[in-house]
Image (cartoon, rainbow, N blue to C red):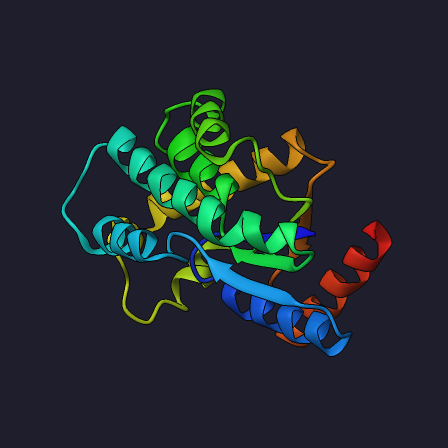
Length: 197
């Protein structure tokens, strides 16, 4: 099973991904926890370039994320799925659809086609979308990266974009209220996952 966590920066994706990994591992499953951008050497370099590098155009940003994702799928995600592991990923294609497709105005369909091409069509079985007020999420940043430094205007667009994606892909995206305590959110995620398996 391929499970992803999405949401604005500061919504608690990394925390929930780790809590789910722990819960599934406690059930005796092999779990691969990974993140995007990242997960491979090339992915980590792309992550540093996108998050800490110079200003860049929207298509350059989308292409760097797609290149990182292509490598990630080929070397980490697909091999893990093929051997029967559960893959839990902090961000995946929906991040590109929200940030570059909608918030940056490139178009969901154009960005989706790029990503389907580079991943061989691999989409998650389920995506948990952590919804949190952008102002609350912004208060959780430790050291803001390049995207976070663009401020609340971008984050508000991203929040609206994620909500649009949840409406567009309801069979895959499960919206979760992320304003609650992490343990409560984790219980809901685990329960919703059991319903689907």
